Image 1 (tube, one colour):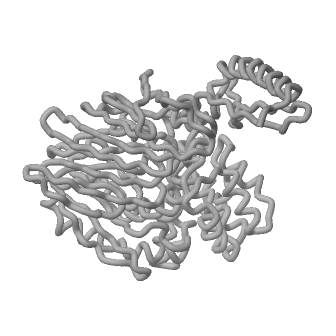
Image 2: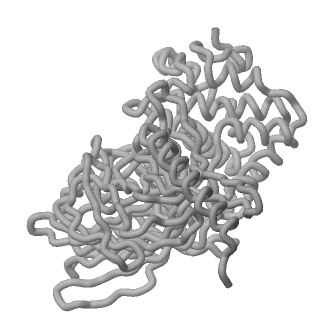
Image 3: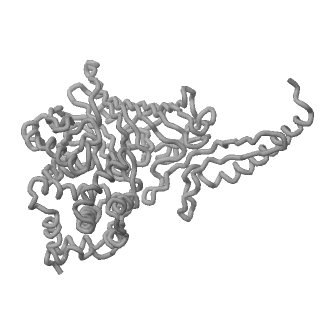
Length: 507
């Protein structure tokens, strides 16, 4: 059917207006940096996709979604360039083949994501390594590198709300980033230790806890070793001199909680909790008997923490012990906590500390790195709750009084919990003062309300992210009390609050 001339004139006019407005909008957006961009003053700019709405006489209203680059960071207060805007990852399917000679990996990763704006380009974090090819929805894409930012330009813009698949082939010798990432264990093996920002040393990733995703990890390595990752071991395939292990983790994980390890390990059955959670451990072959005895208590710990917090959030748990690890520490890598064998790390307190993170830190992930006290304060308090579950007389107050009896430690705790930086995240206040805050809260709101609070907070933010403000809101809702003063002094006062001084008999 032919269009009347008068209507054709309206349409032509509309197209001219759209073209002019689009040019203006694109120019205006050039300095905005895309989704979640941060200007020089530190203000987060609007995350809404740019649109133009055109209304003409006798014509329908039309909205045009203008494609623009996603931001090259999520604007985290401490790590503003980590993560990227414009999309949300659903799953990573990553395959790496590791060659000990030269410490070289060959990798291929398939990323399934949904665009949260119309994308002309998007970034993903990758430290070192060499990118060989990139495709988006099966079509070759253009890409470039600036530092740790891999910018991908698809052949055609991606509309907002679109599920798209990116495949990145890469390889090289992994390098550490800010002292995190790819480590050699001293026994000829390797392990990834990625908190807060070492995840991109072995794979491309949207490296911020706000973008949690499910994972499939395929590891190919010499058959004399064992390849290890989070989740459930789905298959093992012998290739002769090498073996491929495939691990599946359907539960969403923050990037730093996903890892690989390759070494002289043995998979060990660690029993089952009363609720049916299987425990599987990974120990150095020459220490299996000793470590099996030490970690045999884990099913009992799961039972105790489930009674306090709610159901264990995943389908499997266990621990990996690494000998000759260059850093003496432990990390709550999701479903398989990682422990250095260094003296002081392999203790019952640290074992329950890392287990408790599966609820608080893993399932309930932080919303910003400034909220790290929630992860570590809860884990510290869980050590005291575990002791109390074994002996009701072992009230956390006693543990706190022991801390206050140490003047040197008190001096370290005369620092606000919120006083952290990208290079100084894990302070004594984050751990100990954070744990003390929770006991002060317990004393303030009473046993009944506190007993309801922990599972209520966990239930509300299971498999999601939470902030300090979120926790305070649940605490006030559960208790029916206004708690600003308590949280303000424990989080922000330069001096350690004196809530426990009269109880402990300290000045």
